[in-house]
Image (cartoon, rainbow, N blue to C red; front, side, top):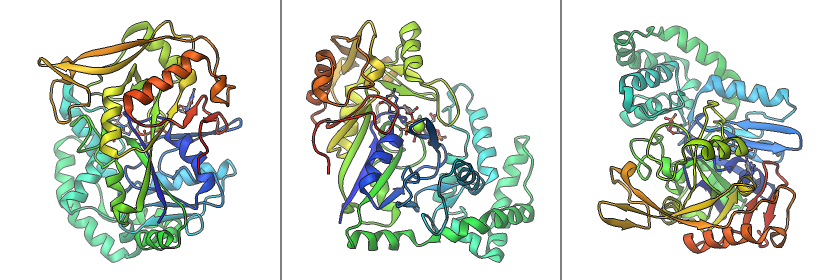
Length: 428
Ligand code: GDP
Ligand code: IMO
Ligand code: MG
């Protein structure tokens, strides 16, 4: 058995897409195991930038098998469009050849998106700031056992029957909130149409992956979002609706112990899109400067990302809870030229000091953050490929984070391109 899980250790957008694309070079299968098209994973190859929302980040390498596993929520119209968009750029994407979709993956349907918007409206000031893609309502239906699954598209009569039944719940909700009701037969027709091409990729992906594991084919499990957005372990309720961590891998139909290694991805500072506590957020000019230097605008919604100092309290927690073995530190180049550099090392809350993120604790917005000042550097790092060539202050920053987090950082990313990576150790 040989599987690696690669996941975000902050609030998403750590640069997972780039790291997974790079690691896919040595893999056979890349599996998205949670979330949906709320994700936006960027891969830059030369002068081309690809933003993947639902397709796994192995898709740019033609010899990789890509899998959307059972824990993923699939918007079939979005998926069809994403495939078309990539094909227009010359990328080979063929359901049934290099893309397989679990029959158990739940579908995101138009009423989920409408429900997402209504719920956000009703939450008012307490809104979550979701991506509006219908993620929460689709997972809600999965748990309520009224969801439709990708495999249901294979049986038109059953599909119509199940849609009719679920619309008995959905339409009164939509109508009472000023939204258009949905016609079950029209929706079924549209679904069956969009499903024709996608269904070529329908598979019992759990059985496929278990066989791949037995045959020692190298599998990468691609995390979406970040540990601090995990539905159970993150900053609830300001989280997404899925299990972001390696625990989520089990819903792909493989034994949890299949994951032998967890590679965490952490940005050299913090960012967050949407609402929710963000203890190291930097307001004002400096925060804006980091946003501009890092191009910190949402890959999915285009929203400006909130930016802050590296939060070792949060990442220490993510490392601990996800069993991270090693870290890839991304966007180190973005910190060049800042007038000051800080890292949060503990929180003070209610007279208590926390060095690991206090899960489940309310009132984090009131936490006093204790920071360590570090020496900034001015040099441009984007062309550096050897750790020894980094300015001393940048190397010290990496050493400091390793000591704070208790895990090695063998990979350091210094730009968006595939090639802009410093490998400190040999990575097999
Ligand atoms: P993901 O959701 O974790 O895959 O991350 P996103 O793609 O949403 O956001 C990461 C952004 O940072 C993208 O625009 C990447 O192209 C970019 N990026 C990734 N690594 C680096 C890096 O080391 N330096 C810089 N400057 N940008 C990076
Ligand atoms: P990647 O995979 C950053 C955030 C949303 C919102 C909260 C809930 O690119 O790192 P949802 O639509 O999931 O119900 O929104 O989670 N969020 C992300 N933030 N990166 C992501 O994905 C995100 N996916 C969801 O902004 O705060
Ligand atoms: Mg992203």
